[in-house]
Length: 580
View 1 (cartoon, helix red, strand yellow):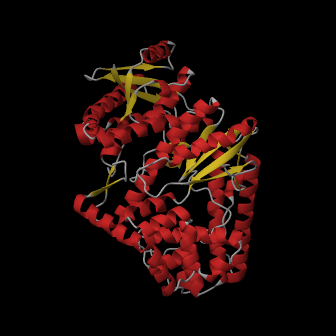
View 2 (cartoon, helix red, strand yellow):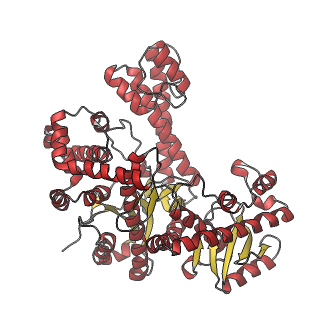
View 3 (tube, helix red, strand yellow):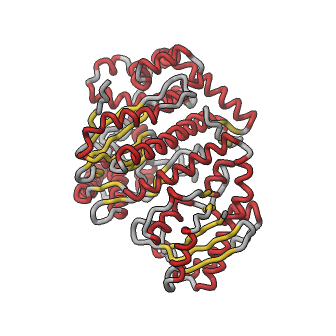
């Protein structure tokens, strides 16, 4: 039995204080029904009966609905049901829609009115105080049943199109599987050290106050360097600095990178103070966001957006765990070492398994350049790029300095790979780069640029690119064909990481009975929570994990991963070597 299913909840966070209070269904022929869970036991009995009948479900944002349903029924469900997700279907078929919201899609494709949202919002509240259970039952009945109807309508429109394209259908099935994997990661959550986080917030606030005092001493009067309007008046009206760039509204930009560029031409001390203040203000805000989302024991259940970006890369929200700052960064002189606040749980350590230059390796596969293939297999491409671009500085650098230089060289490699000019590369490196070094770089990596140009031309002709070996179609904006390279490379890397997570999740469930499990994907890295009592098994199991993550025979340049572990916090990682 195919049945569209939609839930209504008191909030958006199933692992915190939000609950499901109603649900609706719609049959293939369009017959709808709904039930309330907050007005007696009959609704809960209907919900149990529904899932006892083992329907094939159609949902829009399935991970959300399953999470709340599992909470309501007190048991895991998502692994045991065949289901579809119309959000994923819409994204697979067209990655550049202006909206993937249920109501917008149903209006666009089926003419279903979308004015019901305004009516319920009159009762539900706004901001952090939204609660749809306040909406009168008669109004809520129309609202929730129409959402179930919309969901079935979209499935009937989208799914046959996917079935007609085997490669796209396989991508869709991998995405469905990833929802199961991701829900379990969200459920487990990550551990924040609340005391350490609060201490770091206090440090940021103290530095902010100190920079304000120092700015007053330097300028000779009070000035709030934390407010962009006052910074603009100070820099461009009082001190007569030349703007480096402008905002879309036409105002001089005061972003940190532009202030750093201004400081190179005019090292006025106030510029450094402004950058320092901005860094610590942003750091305090980021850390406060972590504290807000953390439970008393420090657990944070972030939301994994498995297929939201146009390139199909994953992202993370509430909070965003993709932008946790590192301690050192050549482009950020005042980094906030936020990785120190994330720690393994008692009785566990964390393994961090990171793809080694995956996007660059994928880009090399596109070139057909056998010399570059060989170099990619035998060496670290980002280190090679850094050694060429930094020359003597690289040769004389110690281990820690090389780590910084490699990170900057990696950024420069990507900039070059995606068509950046010399000025952009020099800016990326944080220092001037001679023309001779750039020519030396081109002698090694020049085929990447040619390959990128071919992708752009292909996108101009077809309007889209396809992920390598997987066949997902990614439409490229016609006025921005230059981003075709980015779409194809990032999209292909996303395909790899998604399948790797599914493989590793299934394997860990089987090999450790779920005692070791995935915690989080961060860009091209996955984090595994490992029980200390099973350390004897780690070598054997992680060897298989590495194989599962790298076994993609469509790539002539093989993929590789680096494994590190931490017992203290995410900033203190150590290499973990697999024995032969």
